[in-house]
Length: 591
Ligand code: FEO
Ligand code: CA
Ligand code: CA
Ligand code: CA
Image (cartoon, rainbow, N blue to C red; front, side, top):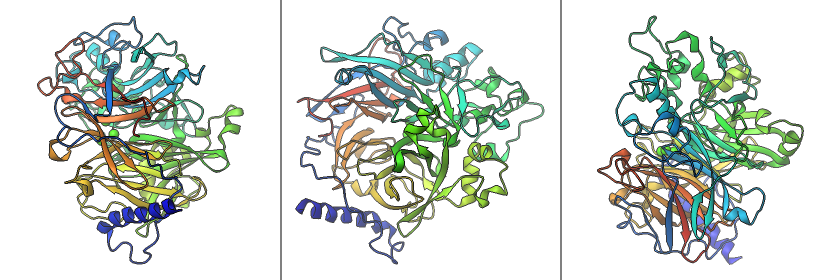
């Protein structure tokens, strides 16, 4: 009982701390947003020596003195043990059999045959978000289709079998191991699958996934990879006739003549916005893609029911009546948070051979200043949309445009979402340097360092109303040993520890870091820090939680003068890699 009281008091303190900057938004109801905690207080929740601020820097990773780490699957390592080894620069064929670059979201799928062995063996599904030409090709611009193919094969997803042998994790010869990249066959499913807006003039079959950022996983054992900044891989030659002019939708999704400068469109016309034969090709990207990590022959499925936007990650929960709910952020300054709710019990739908993601409704969030919120329906039955959009497919394909119509809350770059054991949903709003007017849910203008917002939906995730609060403002930690900025990847474990990877400039000269926060007290401890110019992302664990995997992405921004991490094989370029984290005493990671 005492614990409950203490917890409620600290919960209120967090709430008030978060609201100090939102003063004026809460005048009408000072207790809205308080929620009784459901998690029992665990005194051993975060009993480790934190890595100090002073030690969280340098060209090599650092970790709490109670922990140790190992480096696994750097970019270019073979996906199968006897595959082509890393040479720099590699070539397109070899890269298609090697781990990609830009390690980001990932999930560990334990050995399906043996639950206990699953702590030592399983499939790691890992996203390869991006790698610039100068890093991957060793030159700024591609000079041939072969160069473009190498870049394309460095993107996508790896499914790799890993197992622990004598204390060391290694790649093994798993039958489900494979690479999925920009030229892998994919298929569409759900309400927009047959839309004309997904058909090109040529009628070419859908291929590939790109800019795979965060991820998710389903209760039925599949991996979800999220296509984020897909627009940056398209372009239009300046001398195109007729010249390319962006449509309203292309503008809203950020397409431009040069994109991110990859130059794919100059050799692979699929990415040339001015080329009429591939009209609508760009609508085939921006989706959540479902992958079976155990079946190497499965064709990845783009789930149109979850909408098209710059998908950061997806957190799937099982809600009332066993309906599945998916929470998703659209990572752009002033973009939105979405959720999908299946129409029925996911077990029943799957028994009938249907995907729960193909039957349901998409919503977008409106955060009211009184700490309540509403999920606004993105359906053709919504009269606010039926005048402008002609079909459900059009609403899903141009979800951003539909959400604009509904007056959803423009957030500070919503990155990862995660659902805690008590049903609280968290979203990391990483920063927003462009904000000039604060609101309660985005209470800093500009928002230089980000915040984590949380909410609880009515009706066990399936309702259309919620109560929210600010879990943490990053700037509140500055000047203390809890200091962090730019929260990005987040994951709450079954004990209610919130792990957070950062991506952005940290205070006090620190590198990006992995933190653990007690979701009850709000206390933060630093577990690990990466290397110069990287980000820490992609948090996943074995079932017994004795092994954690995280990723170091864009290490040194590809610049060998900043770091030669991880010094395996060729030393001419730093290589993104996975980090395996264990407690020296074999305990639960984070405890
Ligand atoms: Fe790929 Fe928004 O991070
Ligand atoms: Ca990233
Ligand atoms: Ca991110
Ligand atoms: Ca980020």
